[in-house]
Length: 250
Image (cartoon, rainbow, N blue to C red):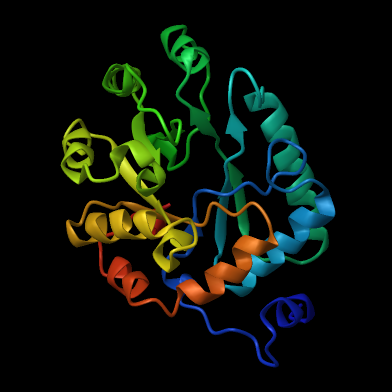
């Protein structure tokens, strides 16, 4: 199990991880062939093995749904989940696997909410709904969409708010958005500066303000696994673990 990780990390011993404290990862792209994450079932198995080795015991896999690009549906996503669950069981992985989706806030998403279409959520009856926006441009009707999802009975969770450049230098705007009831999910790799120094700084400010409910890996490929091994050594990660995160309640 450790051979691939040893080659990747250049170590003779398995990495000791504290991701076990989180227990669950609620943001990843491991279902094969649905988006820009895992391509093949074998790649999915490699990523599952690595995340289990890092300490995770539950994974909620969240492929993108975008009206003009990743046209996934609850049916196609559940079918891939069954495929991955079967392969994972056959290989003896001791992990609880489930699925939701990462919804891009576009006109197609708003239409789904208005029409009462089924949306994939995590957290059981709490109906956490993972959402993302453009990295560069703030949606004109962001608050309206958040209100609509709440009115439909969902709890909106904004994926990786630290990565949206339109919020850089505007942390108070993020905090104002939070007052609408949206929860925040920070990417673990942001804590190691993987995406940018600015993303790490926003993550730092959110952690300092206790404005983070979830840490997610947002794993797409083995290159993200390599960074996750470094994340556990980051003081900012240790600070995040002191927050009342909801991962372990899933």
